[in-house]
Length: 107
Image (cartoon, rainbow, N blue to C red; front, side, top):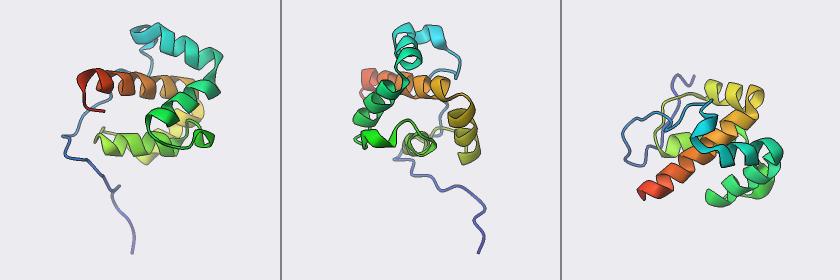
């Protein structure tokens, strides 16, 4: 049996986009500086926000779980590409999205 589509755990949320773009550095300069100068620390902050183990770090799995939880459009392939080739950018995007959802009361 072949899997032809990615399962989604939408949590009741309609399909959405990320709240900021992958390169929206100026949207939150503090987060971007944090990610650039202390990438592992930002990964641990995100893991703590998501109630995950800090040792997991900012991985494709963490991005995929978050994306599936909030029904954000994308795929495992895009998660892989962003986290492996634009790791700091993808991690900062994830943190900005978490912060916005906290402000909106939906995190």
